[in-house]
Image 1 (cartoon, rainbow, N blue to C red):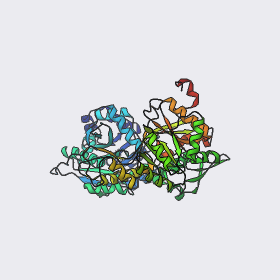
Image 2 (image 1 turned 90 degrees about the horizontal axis):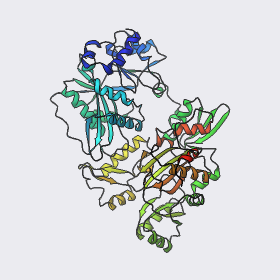
Image 3 (image 1 turned 60 degrees about the vertical axis):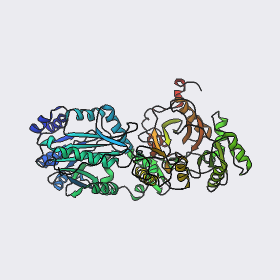
Length: 588
């Protein structure tokens, strides 16, 4: 079969009727899904043709060939380009007599309704670090190819999409004599607080194909993805001896070329920088994997970094960020609004200040990751406890008037705001079946999995007090759909979630972030503001972080901006806010 004909098959799946597909395309079947193509190897008689199809993979995409008749022969046709994917294939045998599963709690699963759903699918993909697909292609497949089944999980309370799965009906696609079907791109928003989303999407897809009389549902899962494998086996999947073949490309590189042990051991905040540097041909030497310290070298230029902290951040600037009291004074003198505050004296004066302002935040003047911080202190006993907790982290403690609003993080790199995100405290959503402690454990595991172990919800006296303040205890069963905030601080390391608002943040807030960084004299920083509304210019400055976590802001180009700063002359950045845009922003 010719290469041109194979390409026609790939494109033809979007416009041809299902009847045409069954009658005309039983051989050499390729299905375009946007993130890559599914190549059904059992439909190819000639391994040379199959190898040629895999070699046509588009840049930035990831094709998958499954069910090849002889995978070892296929790889042998082009061993420099093809490899056997280190994944397992699992099969759920669909019995038509199986009972339908119980309805999910707090969300529902349904097919796509409009292009907005396709956009939301891509948002979930990006949050999971997966390759997105063109919205138009998803929608076209939905309308014109009934072999492709897209399902989304939607919250009952606000209608937001929190998960998605794609299924392929082999019978409708190429008249499969085995009556098979398969599952692809199962993704659950890592910030979703509802349990069971992935399982419900899988069950719903299985039920769809069971109703059509399909014999089984297959899926491919990484051999080391223990959490996913445990889920699939619990649902009833069993391993089968089916292999997948892929082409060697930049996306698949970790699967066929192991990174050096030290690079592989980097945390997500250092690894995102190392990956961006290596992508550009910059040499990465890991000096200390545990701390994320690396030496980046290119063209005679060498820079030592510790995650997003580099030797270009001066010791003076770093000390200014490290001391929250000093940071307040510097940015206040630069005309930036800061909350009322005082250095704790651990006597009656602290209680007098609390009585004056009514509600405070207590935090050590030095520290990171939200350690020792207590938000929402409004009584004498609570103040004493908060002061003691903060003092355990550092002897000097700051008391600040609590300002209303959400926590906004602005990532400023070399005078440019490259990302803006709202950081929200950890919360859980009730199912009517699980205790609050069980919900916390489930959400904490999900946050840890989504952040490489960096984020989890502590089960401590602060969490217990936060739950009690809302009138609940750990042992209570939270009602279906009821949301409960279980921490007061929005710090990622304590289970907080991050929501990108780069496209909507007010220019004045960006100006404040750039001005604060300039006042401190720091080239790379995370500026934290409390804002009632990101689209308005009201704010209160909270603090500056000398080592912001760039991995928290994908898909914004934070790592790209950081490497551009370290190695000037690289390609330009996508749209970001810089001081040059001041003329377009409203006056302060």
